[in-house]
Amino acid sequence: MQYISNSFRPLAFALALLGVLFACKKDETPAVPLPEIQLNTTTLGNVLTDQSGKTLYFFAADASGKSACSGTCLDTWAVFYKETPTLSTSLTAADFSTITRADGSKQTAFRGWPLYTFKNDAKAGDVLGDNVGKSWYVAKTDYSIMIGSGQLVGNDGKSYTKTYTEGTGNTLYMTDGTGKTLYAYASDKKGKNNYTKADFSNNTTWPLFEDVIKSVPSVLAITDFSSTTTAAPGHIQVTYKGWPLYYFGPDAGVRGSTKGVSVPRPGVWPIVYTDSPEAP
Figure (tube, rainbow, N blue to C red):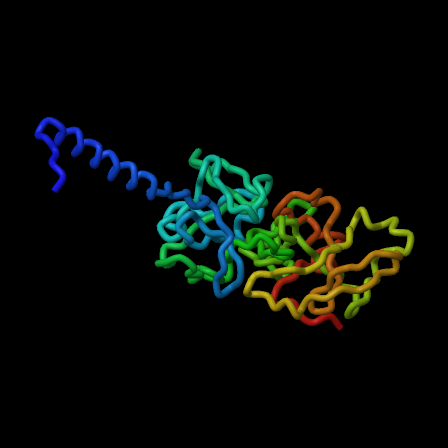
């Protein structure tokens, strides 16, 4: 048996301990923090989530880009905020911004839509908040259509109900993915634009909604959307239930603006929603 003198035993023990510590340190791999905003797969497709995988949501009443959820609403729908969030590689930083809420606090928004989490989502991947009150939808990155809600206010400054009579009340309506209101024209027919001129000269007043429909909120059926050619060569217009869809020029691209509902009189250029009839 090899003999180790008492004088060398402390040194041998120290060297052995260092070896163990070095081996442990070498095997230790630092955990890489997960992105604070992710894109994860759920039963409703790919949705934005927080760092823990909890689903993020949009609120129809926020079409203007301002949060309409306050008071007791916040007991169910918590504000999501990260000052400079880290993102999954599939996400683009330019799509995210920060809004200042009415109480002065901050909230993260995606393409202008403030983000929230839902109290009843217990685990990663839950989407229980989708379509609650027909106003809350999982936050997707590829919505071509979104739902807005609020008071309709015409170009004449008057308030209108969903029946286009003067009065107050909340109305649900369709917007593009960035919250700009979409309209139909009462004189159009199924898949037939009767407004736009072949020379495109009147398009600035009622611009065509030209897009490729990728994704829509769950309250809508993507099969209700299609496209149609117009009198203006080279222009394809999105239709909903056969109605060609338009923007209103004087809305000036302002999110949530509904000025077109009173032009030239209420009902000629209605907003569209799930209760809109099929085009004749």
